[in-house]
Length: 399
Image (cartoon, rainbow, N blue to C red):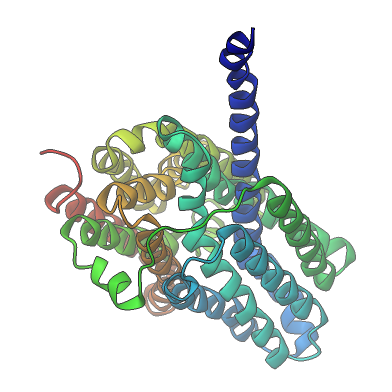
């Protein structure tokens, strides 16, 4: 009788363990949603922030650029400094830093305090990005790693659909400071969920900073990082200036543009999940498959965006394509460095955030110098460069 009980008992235990693992993945997804919303929140609040703090809108935009750059630098540095520290504890501390940064932004009496608060937000973002994806892969069985990674990165797409528009709406309803307070409260809620739902997650192998940076020399990982650099820079060079382009080419108003961006975001969520499994099996092939329509979409919008329905179609294609970029490149990074996933993820997070800041910068310079259409040409060209690098570079897949 004891033997029968011993054989039967692991099944409910296994089910409980699997459920807890997926609940943990859901909590980590909440963390990615929170950091992306925190990073992008100033986009919809630049005008009231600049009015209140008495700076230009361009200066207020530095609150976004600075956050991206700090996140890019902090991702590999934090990972190297962590040692064997329990990653659940680390994630809780990072979310606490994010909470304090958002509260500081809400309180800021002047622009200097705002920038200091946004530096804290950048530290939280870089750290979360560096460890979130590798944590998710450890919470579920190996066969579910692709799905878990896709779920974690869905936080990015959902933030663009719900987080940033909701923050903008709260800002219009109750003031921009209230929007920062709400996201601070969300960060605190996610912190509690992480503490309750995740097990202790220690690291068997410590990777020092020098070894983290040496990873970038590995041909397969170097190819992935170059693809991320060109593709994400190209995307944000174009996407940052999509509103003025649509106003110029399509002649639509702010409300219609908001609807188009919502459609884009929904398509991005679909693209994220549809690319998750395929990206886990064949990251290079999946990335090449989504990069070509992404480049063509960005290049065609200035020419075909004059028709509202064509503009809608192109925005859907753009969302579906770019929605799969984060999860696919992360799967490439995992496959390229299977024994150093967290360190490789930190490099990926650093390059990704640096590319966001660089894309907004070079797109703006191009738009100022040659007109907003040039930002689309530049963005499309950079995505084509990324496609070429993916095609000829080394990857974990057999040729």
